[in-house]
Length: 194
Length: 210
Image (cartoon, rainbow over all chains, first blue to last red; front, side, top):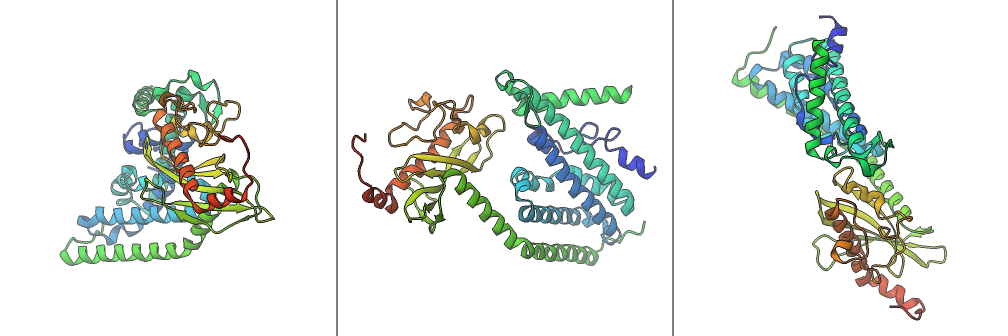
């Protein structure tokens, strides 16, 4: 598999949300609007790339039996660094994304890619994998967020498309997340078969 | 692949090194960003105070007052004009009755207790529902839901469903109740505070106040 394939597989063939069904908790929780989905996706992408780089670099020094605890420490440290730096230098962004950042630690995509990919591959390959998976995750979250925001409150990225009173409240709430996700997975499966 | 063998020593040593390095990096980053974070927070607070109060010249020393029913105290930021006359007080208030727990509000109060503005500082209310409170209660074109320019002493600060004078956010009565709880808490605590009594003493009483 070449590097381009390592990058592009995250979008469609192995999309973490639509195909691997990883990281469902943040997926369903934060996608009440398109911008929230995109923000969470990009923050996760950053951590994912960083953790893949670090873990693929140190993989040979870590005994197999303490792999998971070591990875968790590395990921949690990276997330905390991101949180502190964002809070200090990008307070506006932190204000809108703040609550999602600690969630990245428990996002199983990050640990999943660390364990399944970065611990077996080189630094460059792992970087491409992290980037592809992260952007694929961002794409999925943005799609889900857009659909829910549009159906639920008649807006898209905060711009009003139709009056809010006609929106279906259900889609902003938790059940709407499951419904939209189900339809999107079905759609992606259909497209992959075609 | 040349993976290290899992012996007691190698596992202990690895975990020790990993956590030691992680702790070192976090400590370093914390030290590096500490001052900037404090500055950013202060700046955000100052902007919130400016947006809820009429134009003022200088801020007095902030002070804390414990509300009658609460455990956490409210922070008061008195603001003065160029003649050192009180133009208003920004109160950092809170409620624990939100749909998703605690949220904090910066409320601006004129010397007589009239609400001059508010700004939601932190909340976890549902986007598209309760989160609408950020703008809902300051919509000047809808007098029934607007609280700016009203005095909790003369207007009943409860949602209309509970017999009050303020229209709740559609489908978010719990958030609306909580929001008004935060505002009323600020007002009541302010009324009981020293500064308010001084302010009303210095002001000539206007006739016909109910």
